[in-house]
Image 1 (cartoon, one colour):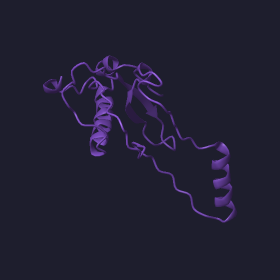
Image 2: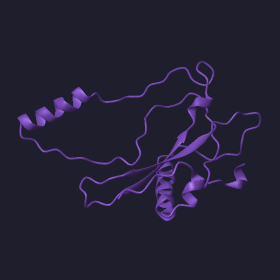
Image 3: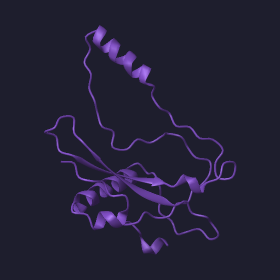
Image 4: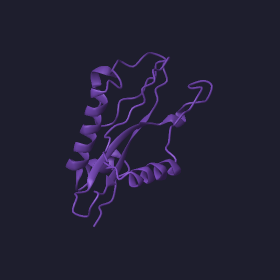
Length: 146
């Protein structure tokens, strides 16, 4: 039986599996730190901060015997930004289903092997020209940087 997914941090701390959700959030924060995604600084004066939110997802394994994985992702609430003021372009690369089918066909045609991997955190490699200030995520607030 699949458990339900919390929709807020407040639900997580009161959940029956709160320890596993907390571990998922800790993994996300460790991954963000390891990739140098941000640095924690005191709040700049007169600066509007981008809000953020935790998203929670249960992922089933490849086979029924694999345990369910608890995933937590920290996302910016970009709907607080305005085009032309806070950003100028949006680009989100996605793979087309036709491309996947073509690759699978080539693998079958030439009797090649196929491996799957799970990328914990994927980052784009672009550099930003501007500074983006975001609030600290709930559950991980350093009061010395408020």
